[in-house]
Amino acid sequence: MTQFQGSHILSVNQLNIDAIQEIFAVATRMTPYALRQKRTKVLDGAILGNLFFEPSTRTRISFGCAFNLLGGKVNETVGMETSSLSKGESLYDTARVLSSYSDVIAMRHPQAFSVREFAEGSRVPVINGGDGSNEHPTQALLDLFTIQKELASRGQDISGMHIAMVGDLKYGRTVHSLSRLLCMYKDVTFTLISPKELAMPDYVIDDIENAGHKITITDQLEGNLVQADILYLTRIQEERFPSQEEANKYRGKFRLNHNIYTKNCKSNTVIMHPLPRDSREQANELDNDLNSHPNLAIFRQADNGLLIRMALFALTLGVDSQLEQHECPVIWYSQKASI
Ligand code: CP
Image (cartoon, rainbow, N blue to C red):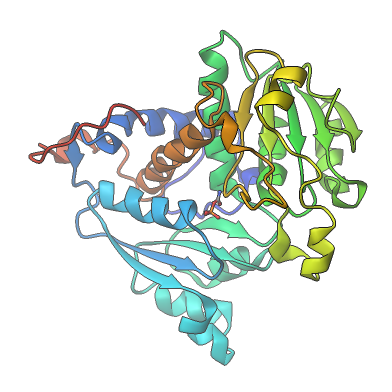
């Protein structure tokens, strides 16, 4: 049994299948609270330090919203320039100070392994919201939770599935974390599609091969999607390139639209993307003409992020067994049909 209470969540490598299933079980119990069918004040009085030193829409807001939905309050720090990090303060000192003001901290930072360095100075649990091109463990958990649900609705399991990952596999941290989680399952087939220069790092390939999974590496999209159960698209991570000119070389290289999907994929292939998708004309890796396609799971992914982050707060703060004890009714009009 993984000890969540009081623990940092920094990398998917600290998890095993039992821990993942425990997170998913708690996430599923969060559904009525996220749907506003019920409220719980289990974290009434608790404070989240939400530190985002890199742009974010989903991760930052859903961490905050997840904490609010459990009854807690959120203190936000957004952008390096509003923090004394910009005056040369160390991550250790920042963590030491801010952990006195918070019960748990979520953090995103542009440098790989910076969240781990920060956690060394923190006296409260730290959850990694993305550290450079290294990892994005909560995104990988919500991706896996989504994959499990989508495949279950088709009578399939994660073990035995075929995933095609497409785009910037070098700098895209979500595919690094998700691949490592998938290494814990059996008999997964990977098709990795990227420009050669943006290929999946060798250390991730080694993990996939050591887990005994089949792997195909290619720079061609068409012809390589026909077996995929899951098609996981990614954006060119322009913020990690040495220059915009360099990033421009790869924009628009791989695009999925309704026509390409219909021609190249099985009729039940699930379409995923961690978002944001780059909708500018020169990129547009996932076209709007698929927005109403039932196999497009991108917004279900984002919704699942709320459940996973609620579960991680409940587990790290040790209140997962007390949700119901602290329930109260929802008294305002609310009609959310699904999460
Ligand atoms: N998926 C994801 O990390 O999105 P944001 O950058 O908007 O948080």
